[in-house]
Length: 209
Image (tube, rainbow, N blue to C red):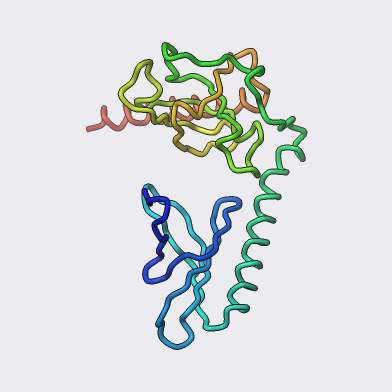
């Protein structure tokens, strides 16, 4: 983890501007005493585990040109995020953010394993403050167990099916089966059906050895 005043680096480039929207961050880096035409850099950044992965880097000595590319890439990311987050509404889903009143607040004694949980909206980026990015199935992690040694919880998004991790303190509460919206019930049923099929295939493969 970087200290507060520590410079953020991408190779030899110091990151001087960044904007994160959607699934990627767009950055501008500057490299003093760089070779000709390589002083400034614009790239996409994605976090992979504990590392930052920089891709599609473009370099130039022309700062306005790099800033123009930076703006274009932010616009492209914004459009992608808009299309993604508008999809539930287009499907007739009520995607309003869930608040504390909409779920049961968790305590230190709650076992979150195999529970449908709600992520706090304030830990999500602004474009993802919607129910379809809050409602998750907790599948494990030390943070899922009551009084666990760690805080990390492994989760599956019941709308997208994507896996992710959150801290126990990021969880707003628990949703009971009768509280689940229809799309979340379908997502939960699909996930469990998939896991049952994987388990059956594993047993079949093991028996064939």
